[in-house]
Structure formats: structure tokens, C-alpha cells
Image 1 (cartoon, rainbow, N blue to C red):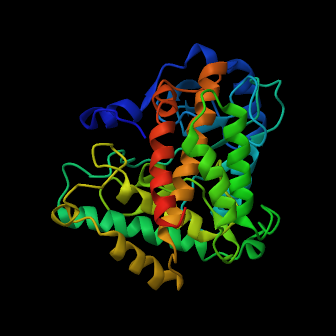
Image 2: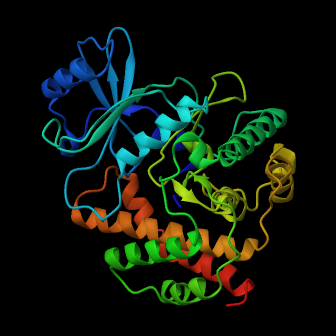
Length: 358
């Protein structure tokens, strides 16, 4: 988890910058493709790169009439199954058709010859992305309303029957946690640089203590406050971003991932532990669980195991980022900070694993 100075978090991650030369686009080729494939597109085109995000490079495409967003696979050697922008396009297309808050998708390009890697184009949704979970500068009631909207939006995602909206084959049903532990173990091993004993212990413990299987739903995989665009002046979620890790699986994986913010130290921008959340107006873990349960009829049964799993998963994701930093395919400077967090995340995961019986 990043230790970026909280006062600098918004400046560090929000907005756009000049395109990193490593991820430069052939703008003439892109303009031709957009003209041919995006209805109503008309240049001239101005391209900038978003600061936030270290996985799939993301660009702002500004024209006189409309602003678009482009998400692409990074060029270079990549881990298998990572950076699946075609899957992102599939899921947001299905959800947009149901009125769920996602950006309007326009077109997917699978031809690497256009800009060097697969990409898709969607509408730019205007609003706020809030990078600091303490929501500085807000009143308690405003904070509470935003946290409630976050839970409501996740519960709405988990209400969909995947097959009913054309996503029945978006992932394999059943054995979700078993498959996820296997996937992230494989990614961790593929990117491993220095031995971390806690990760080795977790790789033994987690598959031996899997929770009972829940229903199969669409899971986002990275559902958190800074992956939401909120209305400029209201606690309304306009779009859920970054669907790269989405699949079919157990909704408790998504919900418990959201809850780990309450156990990450408040000294990190994405942590609440140690903050006076009652004074801030931020609901407690118990209140958050109660709201989600009221909306979905389901509540987590073994949070210690789920927290251990989620922190292990985050450690594996960060180890993958560390591998990309090593290989030169990471998409932002923030990636270097993320890569340094693996031992801390592994230790945190092991702490919860011990509470769960390890």
C-alpha cells in the first residue's frame, strides 16, 4: 500500500500528463482507426496520459466535440492472463446495457498493428475520483453518504445473474477461492525476486482452509473508492472503473476486499485503521456489513480468513508489479512504490491467517 503523503495524494494520482515516451501512440494511425470504428468521431485529436493506474496505460483522447478514454495493454512481455482489456470491454458493455454505472463503451481493437497493443475506447465520465479514504475537507454526513453509495453500488453489481445479462461464460463457476489462490500463487512465483517466508506459509495455509462456496456472481476484483467516479456535487456513483480483474466468482471476495480498508493503517491514503471514523462520519466495519447484508441477504462468515486471502492476493499483485518494474513494463512511477509493499502485505496476511487458525 502506498505511503504517498496524504496531502499530495490527489495531485499524485488525479488528472493527466504528457504521454510517457515508453507508451507513446501512433496518433495518426489511432485517428484513422477511430474515424472508421467510433460513430460520430471527428478530430483533431489531442492525447494525454492519465496519472493514476499502474497496470494498463490509460489515455485521454480529446476532440472538439467529445472526450474519450483509451485503455490498452502495455507493450512488452507480460504475465499470462494479465492486462485483459478485451475482458474489460466485454463486461462494461454488458453492464452498460443494464444501466449499471460504467462508462459507455465504443469499440475494441484487437489488432496490435494500430498502436502496438490491444485497446478499447470508452466515453470519459466527468466527476470526482477520491484518492484519500478519510475524505478530507468534507462534512461527516457527506462522508457517510459516499460510503453508503459505495456499498450500494457493489451490492447492485452482485445482484445480477451473470447468465441473464450475457455474461454466463465470463468465468468458470465454482471453486472460486481455490482457483484464485492458485492463480495468485502462480503469479507470485512467476514474479518472485527475494524469498518471503510469510508468502510461503500462506501458499500452504489458504488452499487447505477454503471457506464454503457461495453463489456465482460478477465480481469486480478491485472494488474500492478510488475506482469510482462520483458526481461533482452529490454522493452518486457515475461510473465504476478498472474492470481488469473482473470475472465470475464469490461476491464475498469483492465485499471483503472492500472491507480491508478498515484494517490498513490510516497513515496510508487507502487505510482507516486508527482513524476516528465515528467523528469523521465513516461507517464502521459492522455497519458496512449490516448495510451490505440488508441489500443482498449475505454477510461474511470468516473475516479473518477473508482478510488473509485478500492481503495475500494484494501481495501477489504487488509482486507482479515488482516484476514489471524489473522488466520495464510497469506503467507508472507509483508502480515502484507498490512493489515495495509486498513484505508488509504478506506479514499482515499472516497475522489474519493466525487468527483464522494457521
